[in-house]
Amino acid sequence: MAAKLAVLISGRGTNLQSIIDAVAKEDFPAEITLVISNRPKAAGLDRAAKAGIPQQVIDHKDFKTREDFDAALDETLRMAEVDYVCLAGFMRLLTPDFVNDWRGRLINIHPSLLPAFRGLHVQERTIDAGVKVAGCSVHFVSAEVDAGPIIGQAAIPVLPGENVESLTARILEQEHRLYPACIKLVVEGKARISGALVQFDSSVVTEGALLNPPALAD
Ligand code: GRF
Image (cartoon, rainbow, N blue to C red; front, top):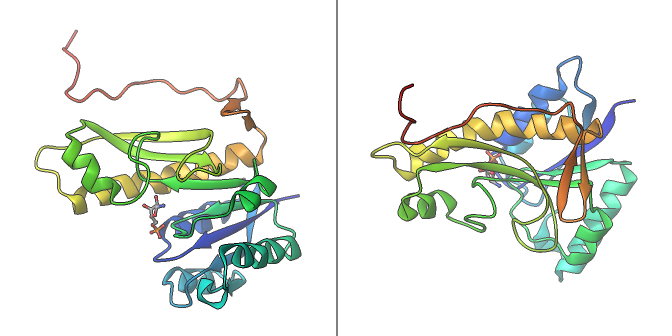
């Protein structure tokens, strides 16, 4: 039986779209049961509607405390019998209790090669730091912000003359490839949380390296 995913968004939902597109493929082992937004006007909700996926707004402004908001979120997820929760541009900090309750089933995507550049304004800080390789990470969520066992990463070179917009767009392109791939591995049990790390099935192998600047020719 296909695993049930909930995707949590706050904004435009391009990562949600990449998951919608992935689950539409025949061999994908999961379906999206529910899209939840904490913002009533999130553009990503239209993507869910277009795909015929049930959606729910849980507006954080309706709750006095973070704990109350998380309790409502938790109840909604349990009612929908969700197996995995995918954060996709969900701009709310979750309480340690919520994170612990969903440990190993709560996944996030972040536009940096973690543990570098946690938090906000990631691409700007990436450019300002002068790093030559940027990218994105998919990770299991732990109580700390943008931290937790890393499931996968995609790396791209930072190009000469790169600005925030161009780097954001190029990282986002990789996010859309990486997130569905990581979700599939988790759902299939090929990537499992093990303490602070993720343990992989031996069938998960990758080769090749990204050097920027490139290596000397042979
Ligand atoms: C992405 O860059 C994601 O890595 C970060 O928030 C952004 C969400 O974009 N957590 P979108 O709403 O999926 O287009």
